[in-house]
Image 1: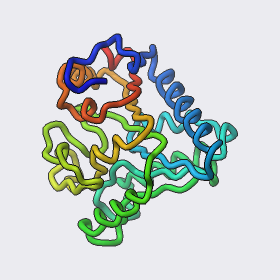
Image 2: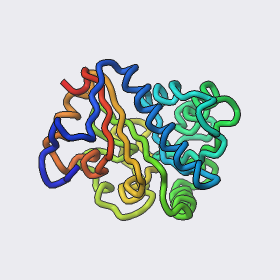
Image 3: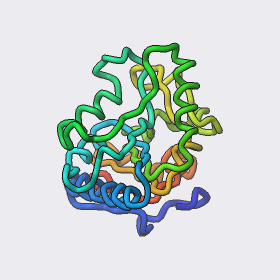
Image 4: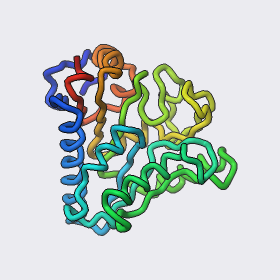
Length: 231
């Protein structure tokens, strides 16, 4: 997808399916195939993943028997700056859905630390991320306002070259978050966005026309929508 021109609805990277359940199953099949391929050539598979409804619904469609999930390292695309045991933590949400769907051998979930100062947590997470030369996929959802991870439309952090960024002024609560930057999110072989529902109509129209939206700057290799979101 070129960031220099309008996005065509006929682009081969756009997948519009009839229902949201078809979207979630299609996306689950896609990431399973990527993990199977990666696992066939090396002992570990490293992926970046967000949290949120579309991601969790996708993970609920995974099959425990389809691959050796314990070889997967799941790195959070972003995390909220809250206590480590808070229900608002993205890593908690991810672990719970993986445990429910796959069982105890779902692999390893890695996220920014909650037990140190947020500035130090940014540096620590950046260090751990930089140890990975290439991720096998990055799977993100999209908010109603068009944000991905904790990168919001028009925010200065979109132009940052930092691998990991501190966001102190998120328009959504909690306001303080740690997010991987576009440089890191884009350092993936497969860049996937999944989103559903009529509430995403405006954001879908915006990224189709505006090359400076977070999704267009991310340059996804696959965008998977239901018809309600694509209208």
